[in-house]
Image (cartoon, rainbow, N blue to C red; front, side, top):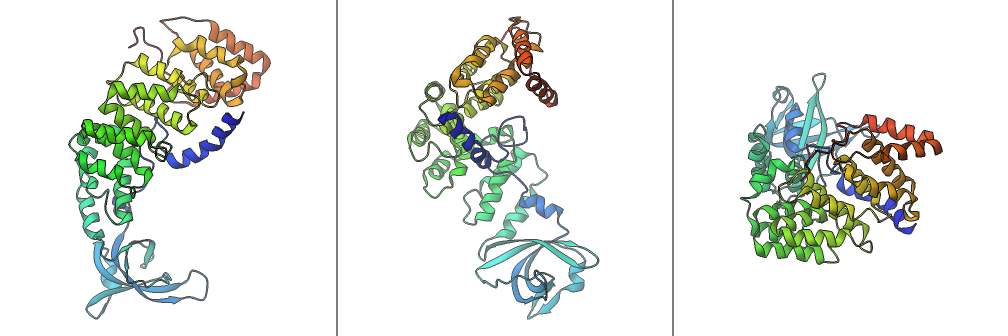
Length: 409
């Protein structure tokens, strides 16, 4: 049980790393990015007023959180009429008093301040600190100019800021990619500077969570020597278990399909490999199934995922993928797992039942098989509630599992 238990403990950690990246019913997110969410472009668009400046003269109020602080305005990114009414001229600079106590007066930083206007008063609701020499104004103004363009036309702007020295800027640029679907950056990635991306991947200061995106980009614009960069990362004991390994698998395989697929199979079929490594390999297989079906025959991908079926700590994930892909020809193999001692784990048994229920409800024009129906009824006789719960959960899924085509590729 040590393997399954370890995986159950690891999954929340992996989910936190991947955030909302677990593929891939979510069509609006990068498959290899571990950071999505609200961007500065969206923040500025929603704010009533956006100012950039430094804080000074903080005064604490009587109650916790109360007080005032002056904002010495350097730039106005988004203006509201209230600013002309409430701003004061102090030494040739515009100053506005905000009803927030900000204790720090560190001159090394300035702030981008997002404000609402409520009852004729400025209501600052978020402040983002950046280094004083950061051109946050130029970055945001440029971002606003491209905000209405198609993702593939917007992303080249943000690519230029992925290695920006200011973490708020570089992370915001990364989130722009994180919020984009793979198809949005697939074509533009072909023209990216491969040597620059390779240097990012080889730089020890590059955050590990960015590896997946960078490696997948390199898989589109790289050459033979860049494939070696990715293979070295996969063979590096310090990197092969980190977040983003699925993107490294995908990038390497895009550059060298034959070698990459052999490497993926090697990982998938070896239960001695760390769970995180095998899970990353499975995610790469998902990527080729869902986003790049032009690279491998679907039967190869099914065979790759099926290598995990005999492994008790990860079989349920492979079963779920095969179910979602409508691979009902795997029916006999999957149902037989139910009686294996190594698979006598509730989450695996539920995945097998879900597969059988979906297979039972689909008219399989290629291989009609009554075993799924008989299997479900057998389980229902033992645990009717378990079957009922599984049926209800499957009804909530949209879209339902696909029927297997008559002529699969």
